[in-house]
Image (tube, rainbow, N blue to C red):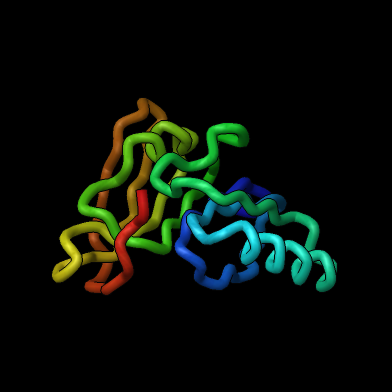
Length: 130
């Protein structure tokens, strides 16, 4: 999908350059790091990225619903607010499971708001901070 809206929840990892029209990123890192990242993004001429310090498990309701959500931190289960912020037909990708047995998972939200999850591969990520 091109031109969609993506939210990335992370704990300080670098953001790639997906082909989307807008990116919203939530991080739990201190404001000084976010300000530094914003400055570097603007210097590089990247203006379609917004950053916010906050609880990544709560997402960013101001700009929901999202076509895609990428979570770069693990959790035992998908935080309900992230599912609620996903558009019908949208996908959420995140590591799921206990720290010692995480699986990178794709969660798809159907047109009827039903949710299906499938595990892709074993991974190890830091825990999603709340």
